[in-house]
Amino acid sequence: MARFIHARSRRAAGALHAVNCGALSESLLESELFGHKKGAFTGATGDKSGAFEAARAGSLFLDEIGETSPAAQVKLLRALQERTIRLLGAALDIEWTLRVVAATNRDLPAIAPGLSPHDGERDWRCSSIPNGASGRAWR
Image (cartoon, helix red, strand yellow):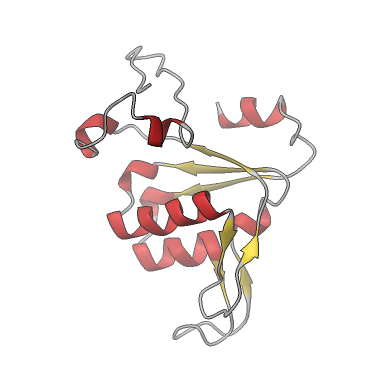
């Protein structure tokens, strides 16, 4: 579905970069999404661009987003709201412009019980496409 959305968008000329969020630890996910500067942590021997930079002007597909920790979700939400990222170990924010597509097999109302399916605060951030198998969508 992410490829379909990307290919038919005005961002089709840009890259489609995918990240399997469920397969990465919290710290590795942060580095994979936002990138890091040399020396930001043990083993960071050079600067590394993250997925937001790799997908610049294109689309970023975040697979299994429901498997991320609450702390990682907060960092991702900040990036989405502010439209900026900060590489680990960097002092300055970087503005980004791209489409973010996310997918999960989790029941979103069950993992976010405080949110109404029609919460106006959340609606500008997320649009849902029903799962063909279940026919359910959250929104």
